Structure formats: structure tokens, C-alpha cells
Image: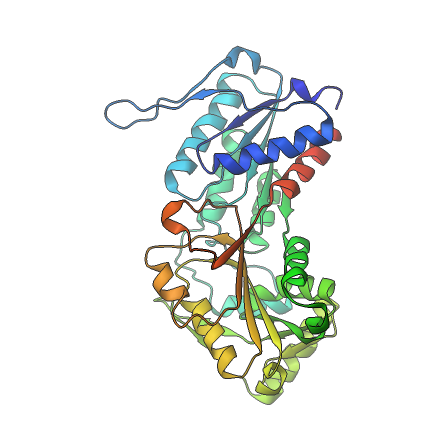
Length: 361
């Protein structure tokens, strides 16, 4: 790119603080100050959006980067409103979306036949509207050409982007998680670390982390009922052996084992999740691992969704020696924990990814 100052940067109201940090990182990489252009956010008296892009006359023919962490419906509505105006009203040439958290991310379709997804098909919801595909379709129709998202729930997001012609980039916090874990755990205890995937969907994340930490992956499978309550599936020995062999081959990683008490006792178990919502499932899992005599249990999660009542559930008889989450969703004063959760920032990872995209244009 000849001049990054010819790029228009805009931000919605979803987690503006992280967006500003991303632009600071981008400014360092380009050696030029990048800043958000102003948007006047407003509503009509009856509640309709009345957001207005200041200096909109500068947009025509330009590359526009729009930032929005979409963790509430109102931020989704705000985003589509702005993207449509940028492309179809003001004539932006190309729009790149930075979406640390993506609304409707879990509502994905049945996927292709792989070792992981054969299991996923058993618990798929054929009567559920595929709102993930719908969301990406709408963003594409409004004008998004390329998007960057942290830790999608599954490969369905990338597939939907491919289906509708949107270039997709994933921000993966694994390296930052690994560095943080190694900081908290004494060097002489690193050999005790095992990464635990509490369900089939967590196995890819667990394998990536275990590859960096040079340790085992332990897993079991869970069934999620209609009421969203999860339970561990008790598999027969022959089925366990088949699953282990299939997962090892598919992920090209030999250190995958079905969890048994002997593999947990005296070990440091790291649970890796894409998100924590109510905290109930994570807490149950952590307490179960402690009952199996784990030396310590750490919880990692990219997205701090943290729905109503989460503190009482997540911290019940707190089994975790450390909880680590990223800042894709802001935790304001009401969601602070007095240090129980250690925050790590993904500003550098998003800034680096955006730099590579823009620098190649």
C-alpha cells in the first residue's frame, strides 16, 4: 500500500477501547498515525437509528476499515447500517471488517464429514435457522469484502464467507495463551501440563496449544440436550480406541488420549474453550478434574460472554488456580472479579493481521 493515510478507519460502539488499541498497533507497523474518523451516533425519538458519518464525501473510491465487536444485537444492527451506507451510498471501493466477536457465531449448519464433525452431526439442530450464514450473507450484501474474527465457534464461519465471496481471516490467541501459561507455571512444572478438550469442538484448539507446549491432549465427548445442559458421554472401549486413532490421524498429532483418572492425577490440566457464557459447564468440568486429583486446573477462553448469573456459577467452589480470557468483549465495572480472571489483549494480533492485508493492497 502506497499510503495508509488514504484508508478510512471507522468504529462502532462495540468495544471501542480494543479498536483504538488495534489502530495504535497498526500505526506502529506503518510508521504513520492511524485514527478513527468520526461518526455521530444518534437515534430518532421513536428509537430508529440516526447515525451519520462525518466527512462522508471523502469515502468514494477509498478502502474503508470498519471495527465492531458484535456481542449484542444492537451492535449488529449498527454495523449493517454503517456498512450499507459506506458501500452503496458513499461509494467505498473496498470494506474490511474487524469483528473480534461475531454475533450468531454458534448457529452454524451441519458440516462436512471429518473426524470432528461426524460427532457434531449427532447433536446438530436441523430446525434451527442458520443465522450465522444469514449474518454473513447480509454483511456481504451490505458491502463487506473481507473480515477478521477471533476464534470462530467452528469452521462454518469460514465456509459461509467462502460461500458468499467474503475473504476470511481468523485471529488465533493460542501463542499468547501458551506464553501466559508458561509465565504462571514454574519451569520445573511444565512437564506436568496437559491440555484438556472438554468436547469434540475444543479438540482443534487443544491440539494447537499442546503443539506449542509439547504436551498431551486429553478429551472426552459431551452431549448437549435441548435445554443446553451438557453431560459426558460414556463410550465403550472399542469406540474410544477408534476415536483416538481417528483424531490422531486427522490432526496429525499422536499425543491425543481419552481422559482417564490416571492421566489426570498430579497433573496441571489446562481447559481450552472458545467462550464462557454462564460458567456452569466450565465450573462442573473444573470440579470434576479436581475430584480426579489434578494438581491444578487452568481455564482459558477467548470470549468472555458472561451472561446473567455467571459469577455464582463460574466461581462456585472455585476449582481454577487461574482463569485467562481475552478482551474481545469488554468487561466493565460490573463484570470485574478482583483479579480472579487474568485479561490478555488481542490488539497486537488484530493489528498485525490488518497490516498484512493493507500492506498487500
